[in-house]
Picture 1: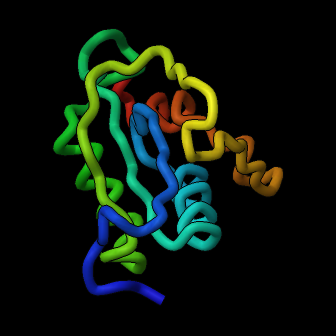
Picture 2: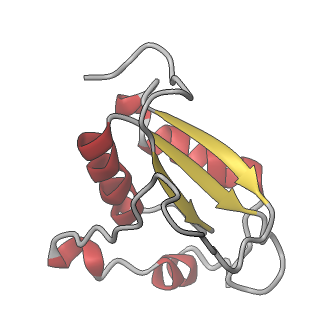
Length: 121
């Protein structure tokens, strides 16, 4: 179900996060967004080295995302964002803000635990 090329004018699910590191829970979340909408924009906040929770530079995060989502090539784009800390919107903005709740196994995956296991904290 992969497209050849991401089309920025097609309906797109937006995911904003640090993804430090990108893990199976993130992958399942993005895959669900792709399933629901057709493609996804994964916006990685620039938080590298702000603290011990942010050890990875954008390039490493992007590489991890692209490797993990390889089966969905063409259905997602990875972009770097400034350190977004607030999202505001006005009325009738033309998009929906919605939370995807995954299965219990995916919901308990912790990037903090993964970083500890990788000894990057």
